[in-house]
Image 1 (cartoon, rainbow, N blue to C red):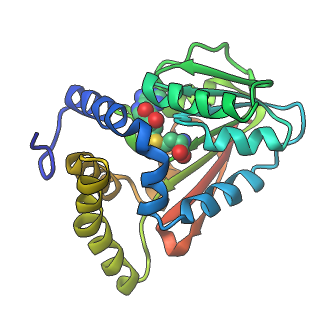
Image 2: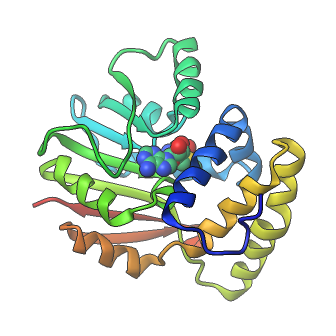
Length: 240
Ligand code: SAM
């Protein structure tokens, strides 16, 4: 495959993302640890801890993958639906959770973020961690996220973003474009997937642009905060 440095069409992107996550599903968690030197666990923990989740609230974790966010949200007493487009990711997560007895209050659904099979005004919280970048039609997904939230409900987006410090940006670029694809090649036997990941991070809107897209989808009180110098950002917004 050759998709590293060229534009891909929307259809191609959808197929590509499907291939990437099917191919990495079983080693996804290990790769995350290696790629981020374990830091993704801290980012996720901080992300969920600052969502303001109260016991009994309904939370939709979109692009929930193998369930990292869902597990943390369950610990805070939310009822969680993990929704992801990829069956292999869901299956990997589900068997891992079953193994540790995390079954109650947790549902797994194969769902496309661009067309959510839920009624309007249903969820208190909607989380999406490292997922929005992979969605082909971001505007559709944001509009759907807004639709399914209750009035007063909040969206929480954790995603790679734009690094501010030039020195850090340089190190980070080398890491994602030189080191990661090689690591992905060796460990997951799949350099292309990791090349895609690096590329998709570079193409994703920076902090103010994503905030603007959230406002266009109807969210209010939109704000963001950077993690690790902007390697990641948490964007939040409310449905009023
Ligand atoms: N949220 C998990 C985490 O933080 O570990 C998984 C993140 S993983 C990098 C991205 C996930 O987005 C994959 O599981 C992929 O299948 C899912 N995804 C991509 N496009 C999607 C779509 N259109 N609708 C729902 N999920 C999607």
